Image (cartoon, rainbow, N blue to C red; front, side, top):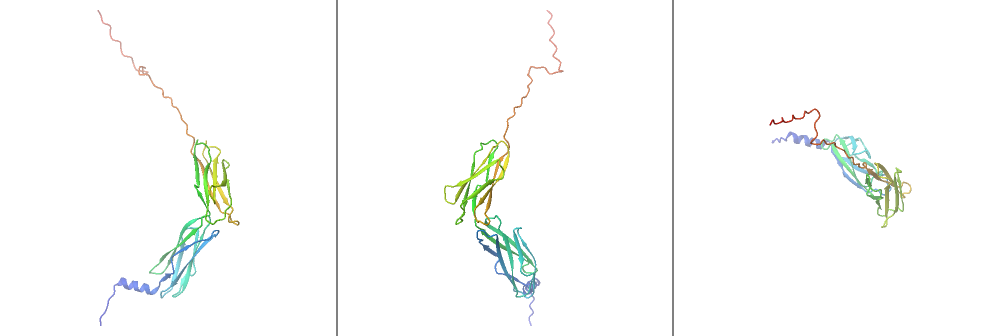
Length: 251
C-alpha cells in the first residue's frame, strides 16, 4: 500500500475550502437612476456553497451617503441572501462610484468589496461655476452659461445672490436649452464673497438647485514712497575732529 503525504499548507487549504465558501452573483452593479430619483439601490446576491455556516461580521460603506445591510448575519450551507447598498443621491450628478466592504469568517475570502456605480443625469450644467474679480478691476458683469440636459423640460431659471453686494440676472442664451447668468459686483475696492443660487422649474415637486460662487479677490494695492535722508559726502560727522592745519612756512 502506497502512502501519499500532502504538504501541510495544502491540507489546510483543502480543509478550508470544504468548510465554507461565499459565492457572489456579481460584485459590481451599474445603475442609471431616473431624473428625480432620491436613491439608487443595488442588491448584491450571495450563496453559501460550503459545508459549514458563514457569519457576516460587518458591512462598511465607503461614505456617509451610502448605507449597507446584509439580509442575514448567519448563513447556513446552501442558504442564499443579499447585501443591499442604498446610495442617497442628493444634489450629486454624473458618475458616482461607492463601495461596500463585507467582512465574514469565511477563511478563504474573509473580505469582499462590492461596488455600486450610479450614473446620475445632469439636469443643468454651469460653466464656469466660479467667477472672480481682482481688487481694483472694473466692476463689469461676468457671464455663466447654463446648459439644460438632454430631454429635460426646464423652461425657466431663477437666480438670487445671497450677498446684496452682487447683482445677478438671467436671460435666454443663443441656443435652445441655454441660459446666460450675468453676475456683477457693486464695487471691487475690498474683498467680498457671495453664493449665487440657481433654481430650476423642474421637477415641480422638488426643483433642482445649483450654486455659483462669486468673489472679489485681495485688496487694492497702494504705493508708498519712502524718503531716505542722505548725508552729503562733504558733511562732517559729529564728534569727529577736523584735521590740523598745515604749519606755515617760515621764509
